[in-house]
Image (tube, rainbow, N blue to C red; front, side, top):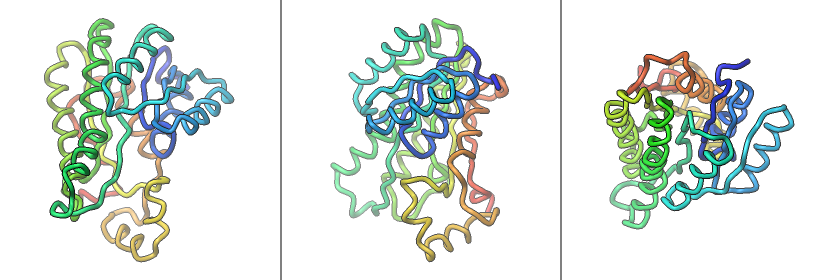
Length: 250
C-alpha cells in the first residue's frame, strides 16, 4: 500500500487514540511520520510499533501550545526528511464545563491547545509547503464545531474556530497548491472517551444521537484523515468532513 509514498507527515497528539491510528496508518501507506505528543513515552511507543512493521518514523515530545516547540518540530522534520508534505493537527483536549462555570484560565487553556496549536502548526509548516509547491493539511475539529455542544462552551468555540480557520487557510493558500480541510469526529471510542463509552447511561445517550447503531472507532477517523491527506482528495479543500455515524444528519 503506497497512497502516501515519498510523503513526509507531521501528526500531533500521536501518542494515543485517533492520532496513534493516524500515525500507524500513514506509515503503512508509505509516509515518513514525525509523531509528536506531550506524552513522550507514549509517542515513542507508537514509533516503535511503526518501526516494527518496517515503517519510518520519528518521535518528538511536543507541547503544541508552544510556538518555540513548533519551530523546533518543523526544523527537526526538515532536517531529518528534507520537507513537510502533510500536517495533521490532531492534538486537543476535551472540556465539558458550562460557560458560566468556566474560568478565564480554563478558557485560555482550551483555546491554546485546541485552536492556537492549529494556527501555530500551519504558520510554521505552510512556508515549507509553499517552497515545495504543495501540501495537505488536515485539522481535527469535532461535530461540536458544526452543531454546538451543550455544557461545553469553550470546547465548542475552539472547535468551531478550527473549522473556520481551516476554510480561511484553504482560501489563502489554494494558489500554492496547499489543501486545507477539517475532520469532525462524533462519538469515537478512544482512551479519552472510554469512561463515557463504558457508562451504560451515557452510551445509551450516544446511540440515541447516531444514525448508525454504534460508536465509532479511532481507525475510522484515521481512514478519513488519510483520504484527505492523500492525492485521492486532490480537488478537495476547505471542506468539513463529519465522521460521526450520522449525528449531524439527525
